[in-house]
Amino acid sequence: MNLQFRPPPHLNAIARSALELVLPLTGFDGGSAQSPGLSGEAWRKIVFLADPVCDGCSLPFEYDTGSRCGACLSQPAAYHRARAACLYDDNSRDLILQLKHADRPELGRLFALWLKRAAVDLTQDCDAVVPVPLHRTRLFARRYNQAAEIARPLARLTGLTFLPDALVRSRDTGSQGGKSASGRKRNVAGAFEVRRPAKVMGRRILLVDDVLTTGATAQGCARALLAAGALAVDLAVVARVREAPLRVI
Image (cartoon, helix red, strand yellow):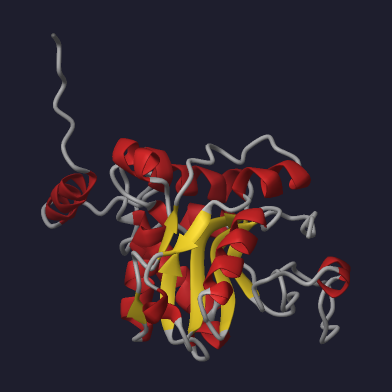
């Protein structure tokens, strides 16, 4: 039997950090960086989001309307507000996929810094940070939850309580990729549970994930948290798609 040793992702991250002490600093994009993060060229390619954005889903507005987009006005989400650090495109996608599939959990610290800026109004109002959970089978295969790798340093940066195990994915939903809005909703229906209600009861929760597409996963998580007694749920994601959410309530 040919078994290939695969070092733990966090051990890889420690080794890369040690190398940076003796070698020129390299950005996560592979270019030369002046500080941990991205090269100057990569920074310029990321479309970071700032006001004005929709308060409900972080859709960027051309002008400050002081309101929400049509989708959020007509079909309000279970989560109260949402903020995204950047748009999900070819440039941000590569970094997010590195975090999810390339054993680069240290990217979570970079994304947490982005969210500290983008979601500052949410973190000021929330009490605790909860990552969108992975099912145990996917967690075993990936060996870490990418949402937790973002949520943990974000909680530390903002002084909020980190609740990594308050919310669980009780059913393996598989990938949401390629599914319609209604298909995504059906795929995650009833998939999330709060196993420790006392940890969320009476608290305003900041839910953290990597990408916002239709919001089906975040909706399922928010509904479970609210049913367990959370006062409110806000959402912070690294990136959101360019279009308004095709939400199915």
